[in-house]
Length: 309
Image (cartoon, rainbow, N blue to C red):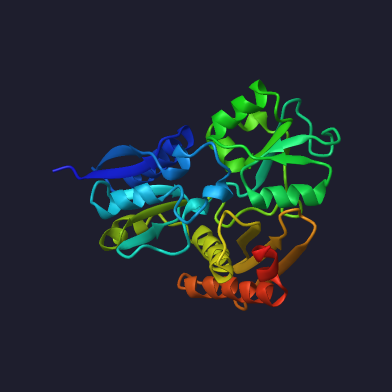
């Protein structure tokens, strides 16, 4: 009898791409299974008339899917990892991190201008306090305005309303939707440091089912995002605060860079640290320890005061 794996996802083109991607990986790993994709509307999808920080809260885009898991409606949920709270609900497991996509941010402007080419006082749309702070640090003359909706909706607002000159978006989302041709500029880490987990997908399931999904994990990606999320956890921060973190494995070594910012971008704490020894397959604990150590360093340098403000 064919096993049917029910995958839960949000109602957007990007979320469906992510769910189909995980479905393809699962069918390659487990021969003979069937896939059923089920859609859910999350609180973050429903409340589009308010800025994310105002309604922000843990699980804004994930809670409906997590409840569907706990109630047995689906077998796994596919999330953008940056949306998934760092604390796990009892009974659920973060079973797999597939190979990460591009972690960087991108600029999409009406006329193809880069950030430096935009006129004085240009209006840039983003829902991210992290992007807002870093954009203002690069150019204090900018007007950074809130914008909500999925990627295609934001692009339509850019073209149609005249209220924005450009948008700051996650590069991976644009690439996954076949919209890379709209990109005016890709930011490097020195310009806009990404959100923890940006570009990565999370496969969440009930704890007893984790072995079935765990083989989807790409170890270097999993170690990198474990360090980034440990840094967030150490600060008790999330996507509604101006915090960036990016880790990568090079030559067997894991390095982590992070930043904590004021909302206006005028004050920043920049940090960088590398794991003490080369990573091995069993080194998840070392990745977590790296993130926790950098969070402690950030707090010692006054990160809690910036975040509290």
